[in-house]
Length: 456
Image 1 (tube, rainbow, N blue to C red):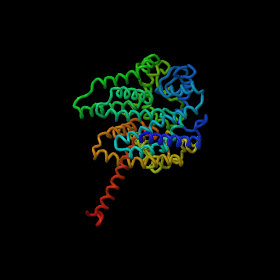
Image 2 (image 1 turned 30 degrees about the vertical axis):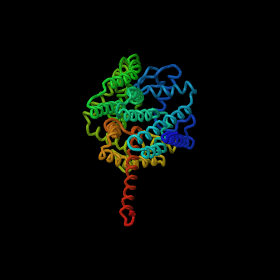
Image 3 (image 1 turned 45 degrees about the horizontal axis):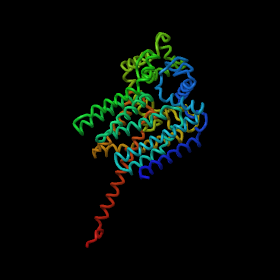
Image 4 (image 1 turned 135 degrees about the vertical axis):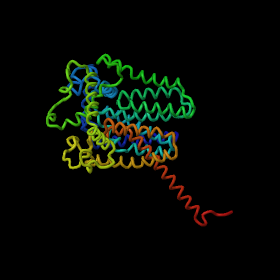
């Protein structure tokens, strides 16, 4: 057994134990919902309808989707996974969560391998141990949310990227990259921008190293990516008349701009499903047309209210990257003087929320671990840039993508966790640098002492 294999086994055992202890201690190995995210009920509803042969549909009107009709309000991969669990194991949440525990091991293993690749095995081991016990990643195996497969897919996309960044990678690896990228897009749409950035990065670096691009492998990569998205594009054309591989989710721009501003106004506070009152000729439009209308309305709001849009985006960036306690920042950016309790209080002390106030011990553990990691990660970024560690540049690109998305579109703790594993790699890289520097300083100091070098 190689040393790499021993480390992978050790990290896997540590990660499984951490996650199972959490589920046993705070709930999860049961049929209850323990987290406040409302999307869970929608995913379960669609999965149940899929398992029972009613296709992609919701049982009650949800957002721009009508009850009992084919919908594309979410990407298809996660509901399909839950539906498959239902078909195999019956309608139980326990197998779903146990599968999510196993899938989370991919993130831990990838982090270890990436750490070894960009630096050495010590960096990989530090990063792997930190990821295995990182509170937020441990806790996110419990909610029935698409993050359960999205986090592993983002990790795999990063790992295949660093493999393709080496000299003359096998053609089969290009196919794997295309497939992983396609599956990630079919899980969460925001990854589209990252896929484009990483593809540009790979082409640019290949040009830098060899002054040429291997044309055929990249064509095969794009073909694999297209083929993985093609079935969903066909479904969307059949259901909504729109040949698109993306879900009808552009309306979320309206939700996080116009509706975010209006929902607290007195005339809208008691309105359920406001989009049905706002979109004209609701019944005469397809789901895709409703989506486009709300998207356009969101764009128009930005043009007409740039100041409000800026305030909303800064607040979302604070929600994603809570370096300063939001409880100490006054409105409109923070939660100071706010007496409202988060939704999760009705679920329990470890409930995961979309808008986190970092009040409970579990929330404080998550935020302080994150703050420690990002401070160290900044040191790692500085080291990577000053040492011109080119095989780690793609890590910085991933962080830029997430920060940009958080600022321009929507941000939250949940949407930042997509890249926390890569922050941990950079933090481990910096810790390893400090360890080496300290040892070098001690050795130099020892050798400089009188009598420390004996003559022959």
